[in-house]
Amino acid sequence: MKAQILTEETGPSGLTLTDVDDPTPAQGQVAVDVKSCGVCFPDLLMSQGKYQLRLPTPFTPGTEVAGVVTSAPDGSGYSAGDRVLVMSVVGGFAEKVVAAPEQLLPIPDGLSFDEGAAMGINFQTAIFALKLRANLRAGETVGVLGSAGGVGVATIAVAKALGARVIAIVHRAGAGDMLRQVGADEVVALTDGWGDRIKELTDGLGVDVLIDPVGGEVFDEALRQVAPDGRFVVIGFAAGGIPSVKLNRVLFRNISVVGAAWGEYIRTHPAVPGELHTELTTMISAGMRPPVNVTYPLADLPQALSDLENGKILGKAVIHIAD
Image 1: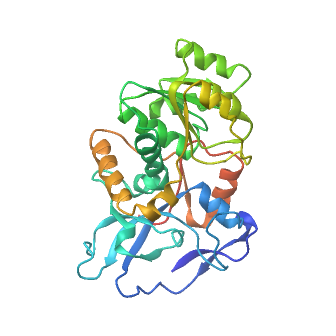
Image 2 (image 1 turned 90 degrees about the horizontal axis):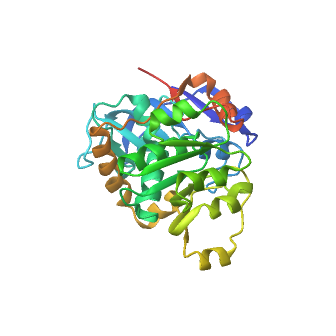
């Protein structure tokens, strides 16, 4: 089979498309033909040796697989021909992958493989952050930083499905139409005075929930836009800087700052992915769709990761591997 192999942690340039042996399932594992694999920020960090999980090279990255089961052990709950998502951690940027049954989830009816791969980490993270960490209620207002990225568009879509009003906050030009199509009620450009615009849109109160996958310089101003009794949810630090919280603002304005590290959470709550997937499947049945904004062939994975790193991808990119 063909696979993208990371031979050195130099970023996208460290990847090479290579012919390798098909993976052999260990006892209890399921074998899957990969059809599509989402491109996400952890893939980029892994190629640079900056991710929390660091594996010795060479290896194949890829965490958001959609494909078809080719073989499965008795009692696994899966059989040949099943359309599945695979939370593979690594190995997804290849034509075949093997995984434990608990790493698999069924692809919701009606979704293409590209759309299934686009669900991946982003939609699980979005519903985890909004429902389990922010305790979002229908009718509340959600602000989304980094809204033109993969986590951002997933958060907008899930927040709308949960009955929220959504304000997308974006620094990239030309993203407004895409964000409104995903479900944003308002789009605020991350320029001077953006905080004042949030206040204007919320009658001076601010948002009930603010989702931040960005960190960096915007954190202080973003914290000011959270309404009393509101929740500021930290998902990550895509901007690179890890900010500090001024606790006097948290105290006197009666707001909460909470973390939403999905990968870490499921280590101690292994049933959660399946539970959240059931809710996401219901949302998809009601009309929600994971957006696929750009696709690349497997050979162009290094370009896809470079485009992600350089902010050239609006929304979600997917590597389309096979029909």
